[in-house]
Image 1: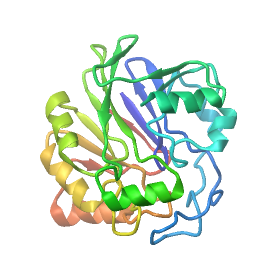
Image 2: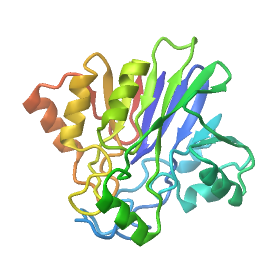
Image 3: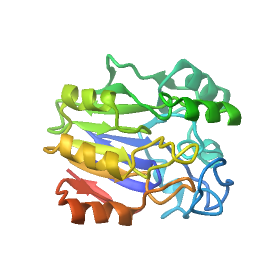
Length: 261
C-alpha cells in the first residue's frame, strides 16, 4: 500500500493493485478567493502551487470524490479528468452533479461496502460542521452543503486496512469507525480549517492528538495541510505536537512525498 500526498486534500492511493486518485484540486495557487467569515492565513486559494503537473496524476484506475467543495474537486480537475473513468461519490446528489459535468461512470459508495475487484470500500460518516448550528448557518449563507464522507479500504490482497477519515472533526463516529474497522493506517485532514472563525470543520491540533492516542497502534498520516486560506494548523504546529507531547505514531508528509506501508 502506498499513499502519495499531492497538495491539500488531493492524494493518490495504491491499494491491492489499484491506483486511486482522491479529491483532485488542480488549480494554480490563488485561483480562488479567500474563504469568507474566517481568519484567513493567505490572500487566496489554494495557498501554494502544485508540486507537479496534474496531468501526471491521471493514470488512475478509480477516482474518489469525498465531497464537492472546491478544495476537493475543482474546475481545473473537471476539465482534465477522464470522464469515463470509474468514480466513487458519497450521495445521489453528488452523483447527479458529476453526471452534469459529463462523468459517465459514477457509483455511490455505501456504508455496507462497495466491491471493486478484490477491494471493499466502506463509506464512513463525517462531521464537517454538520453538527454545529453556527457552521450550518454559514454554509447556507454561501450556498454550500456541509456533507462529506470518509472511506475505509479493505482487501484480502493487502495486509493492512486504510481509513481515509475525510473532512471531519474528531467525534464519536470517527471513534466508532476505528473500533469497527481497526485500521492500520489512518489519514486525517488536519489543517484545523474553520467556518466561520472559531468553528472547526476539520481536525485541529487537539483532534490530531486525540486520534493519535485513541488509535495508538495505528499510523496516523496528516493530510490537507498548508494549502487553504481558512486553515489554523500548519505542518510546523503538528511537528511541535510530536515533540512536546511525545507522539510517536504521526507522520506529516510534505507535498509530493510517497509513504509506503
